Image (cartoon, rainbow, N blue to C red):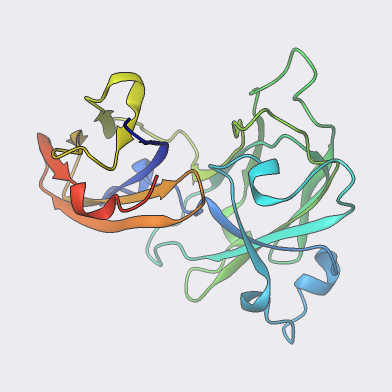
Length: 240
């Protein structure tokens, strides 16, 4: 009897064009022992905080409605030669009390959407370019609570792109396995990445099992235009 393995394929297409790039990683730092004001203090080492991935549901990572108040934060950089305002698109399945970038209040008081007819609807904020550091790191922090149970699916997104971002770069994943399930007996576990890059860039691929084990972290350089990349990961499937 075959033992199926459920895999999550996470991909990020980073183009050389500013307008096609999301400056935020899906992986954030989280702490229930600190709030935003503490996180913004320079003597706090957020690298010691736990990781939380917005591409996974809260409950898969141990967070529920009764987990209490938490601070999600991450550092990011933007090109030094691009003086453009940015657009923050936020859709989180939790209560968002406040959002700060570099210590300045952006917005907040956003209730969880999951049990409403607004699930997946993003709240948009414009971030003036003079609020951002063009050299060195920026930091975004979100005070959150009441993490919604979502049945194992994420529904979360937090995207920071230039205003009027051009989304012409695109990526499609083809999974040939029936029901998108592979087994440890499969001799040809593979996927195909089909891309259309506006300019020279790279594709970052991460494959994570249902047990939260990271099986693959790989970067592919891509030229401008369209193309396909077959990727075989048979040797990485070692357990159900």
